[in-house]
Length: 136
Image (cartoon, one colour):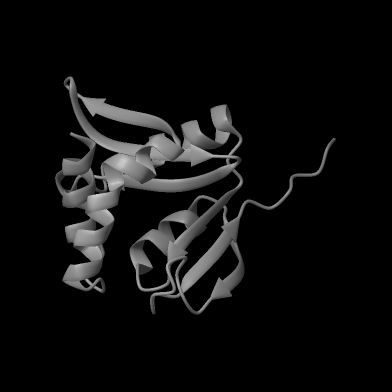
């Protein structure tokens, strides 16, 4: 079920990935990536339409089915991750302009950039953080 959500989301938003990268990531999703995070799942009418994965204050993944994109599911997942799980950081592929804009619109700011992704592939990663809020 979560792999289906991931597949729908990534096929719609990650057109920069090579097919071999897509297949490698999908092959590791259920066995390696999902068990490494605390999962939040969003459903509509009892059907899961999105999920987020959180680890140590970082949003490690957020995916919404293509059909549910733009309907508030991603915003709801992000708000839950920040409010209930202390998320203050997220990394986003530079080529995924829609995701970058999404996080900026929710208050994140860019604090860094790497030329390669975590696997050493030529997909630049932008590091985003929520600015610290002053204590009043």
